[in-house]
Image (cartoon, rainbow, N blue to C red; front, side, top):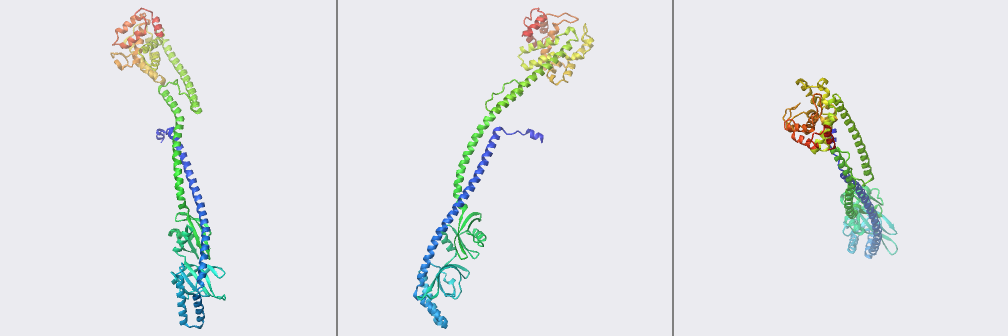
Length: 567
């Protein structure tokens, strides 16, 4: 799991900035959408409620006028002398029991009602006696009023005339009634103009009110212009309590309703769909919101990219500089200038201070381990007074050769310290062999030949000296393969080891030994050229020759080293 997490790369700062910005814009747009939706719905609900109030007032006014006109029309019809005379005669004969006369009089009443029905728009014209029994009925729905059947009436009376609700044969009618009076004030019956409270009436009511309508009577929904499912839900919610107004959900849509008029236990409602009314407003709002959203997204995109660049570019430059610093291991490389923000400037300043401290610490460490290497070389040279300073001189000569070969600074530093340590393995060689004043025997020479291997073994225990091991171990290899310890040939030998091999041989020839005198620099170079290609690499000898001014003269060995140090 740790490996998987360590291998997972985090997103770029630009991507994270875009993600955060777009998430913020999305949340804001979502909040705006919710607020706009609720605001529009509330405004529409208020508008629908206001519209229903206006419809109620308008309907009340129109209905009052309509009822007055119907009452006036019924009153005119009630003044029909033939109808009143026939009704009065019928009631008189009804007491004597002359059935033939009664039948004739009822026929006369039916005839007169039929004539009257042809001149009015009521569904039925009904004549009832003083006991509310039907005597005769005419009109389109006259057959719903059988003769002799009592009429169940719920009415708001105003003197003799009234506006009420009548039920007969499981049907409900709205009736306008006027009395049939003689000149002496005697009332002989009532004349009803009845209108059926059915779907047609609900449709006419809806056209008049300009809304959907529903008629509730005696706990039941008589008729409505609602869809069947909505009508059933409205009946279940409203029929029992008959509230004056409110809102509810019908068939998944929010509706507002308001009582138009109540006649007895019958209530006429106007309904308006809030969702349907808000649809147009919501579409317009969503269209406007879409334009706002597009603009916000574009602005967010531009702002996010600009912000990310302002933040990411200086950090990216700093990151790149740090990467180059890590690749070259050069902590002195310049960092990009600040100025983009205080935080980035502080980061650059802090990192620069850290790198300066690191460079100082590295320099101190370098000086410390260089001093340790010099001390090791001095300790080695101190074992033999004839080789005192040998390692230092070989180091100087090797660096001079490396410069002539255009080696980079890092390789020159490895060459310098490796040359100082090239004979470190002689620490393990016995003094009687190392300081012997005369020529060595084969066995003694074999012992001396072990010092490169011993030196490499010593350096392998010191990690920071690992780069110098090839010089210590291979500086006695020869191009002809007759060197030691591995018998490498030609270019198999590392360049640094070749350089130290030539510098070591030159210093050995020009330095005095117990068994011989020091030879001049010219003799040493001639000896090196003589053995070039077999014991020494010719290009290395040539580089040494160009690094030593006046090599053809018999100058002293000290003068040669002084020339090398000045090179």
